[in-house]
Length: 503
Image (cartoon, rainbow, N blue to C red; front, side, top):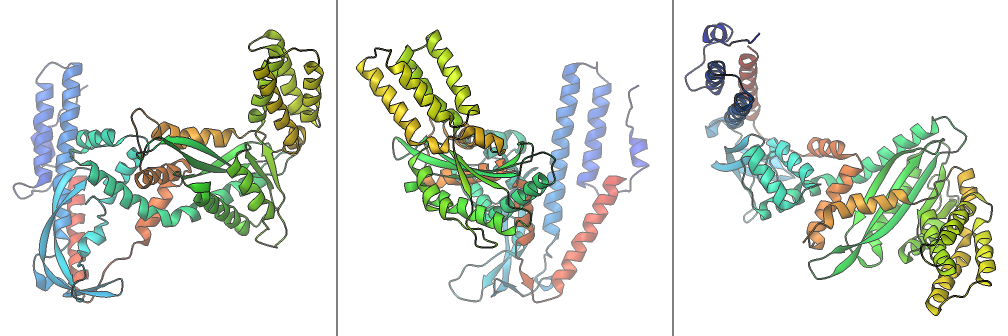
C-alpha cells in the first residue's frame, strides 16, 4: 500500500522555521514531488524521475545547509574574532573577510572567512577557518578530495572530470585536478611507511598463530615494466612487493611499492630495504623464513648481493638467511625454449618432454641438473639448425649457471613460495591497468603522484592514511577566548539543525 505524505502530517511533527530555510524548502519540495508522483500513473519512468528528483533536491538542500553552517563558524564582526593567531610559530593579525569558491560533495559553495596577515612583512598570510575545515589543494573539502583521489586511482583525467560534473556538478580543469591530487598524495606520504609496517606486523602475528607444519614466510620480490613516457619512447618503471604467508603456505596479504623510471631503481631499493628492516626490528615473535623471489634481472641480482645477502637482523645483529628463489615459471620458459629447439615448435614430442621436465624441476632434488642431463641426451640424437642451436645453448647455460637458486623441491618442503606471481601481478595491477592505456604518456612527476595513490590503495592502508593525515594537522591557536565563543555558537546552530531534521 502506497504511503502518502500530507502537509498536515509533516507540519505536525516539526517546528516552525523562518521563511526560506533549506529544511522547509526541502520538505515542501518532497511533498510536491511525492504528490505529483501519486497523481500520475505509476511507471518505471515515473519512479526513475521521482528518485532522481529527490536525490537532486537532497543534494541541493545539503549544499545550502553546509554553506550556511560553515559560514556561521566565524563571526561577521571582527570584535567577535581573535585579533591575532599563532600558527607554525608565526603570528598573524586579523584583516578582512574574503570569499572562496569551495568544492564539496554537494557542489560548489561560497565560504567567506577572515584573512590574517603575517606580522613579518612579505610573508604569506592565512585563513584560519580554511585550515580548521581541512580545505586543501584544489579548494576542496576533505570529503570531496578523498573521493576524487580514490576515483583517480583507477580512472583517467577525462573520466574523473566527467564524474565530477555528473555526480557533483563541478567543472574542474586538468591543472586543478592535478594540483588537488598532488596535494592529497603529499599529505598522506608521511604516514605510508609506518602503516605498511603495521600491516605487515599484523599479518605476521596472524601467520604465527595459524596452524600448519611450516614456519611463516616473509617474502619480498621486485620487477620492472616498460611504460610510455612524454619524453619519448618507453622507460622501465619498477615495483616491489612484500608478502606474508602462514603455516599452510597461504598468502595473508601483500604490501606494494612502486617507482617511476629511474637509473638502477635506486629509490625503490631504498624504500624496500627500509620497510624490511623496520618490520623485522619491531617484530617480537620468532623470526619467519625470509624469501626473495624474482627473475634474474640485473637490478634484482644487484639488490640481493648488495643488500639482502649482507643484511643483519636489526634486533641482535646476526646475519639474516635470505633465500633467493628464482621464479619457477621464468625458468620453465627456458626449458620451453630447449624443447622447441630439440623437438620443433608446437610438436607433441616437445610438449610431452616439456611437461615431464617441469615436473622434474618442481619435485625432484637437484631437478635443474636432471633437466639439463636429459636435454644433453636428446641433443646427441637431434639435428638442429644454427638458430635452434643458439637458442638451445642459451637456455642450457642459463639452467647450469643459476641452478643453485632452483631448489624447488627444497623450497616447497620448507614452505616457501616458488613463483613470483605476486610481483608479476603487481606489474599488471600497479602499472599496466592504469599507465598503459591507449594514447597515454607520462611525466615522472605526474606519474609518481598516481603511482603513490595506487600503492596506498592496493596495500589496503588508504583509510588509515587519510585518517592519520586529518588527525595530525596542526591548527591555528587563537590568542583570544572569543574564538571559542564563536565555535560554541556554531555547535549550537548545528545541533539546532540536527534536531529539526530528525523531527
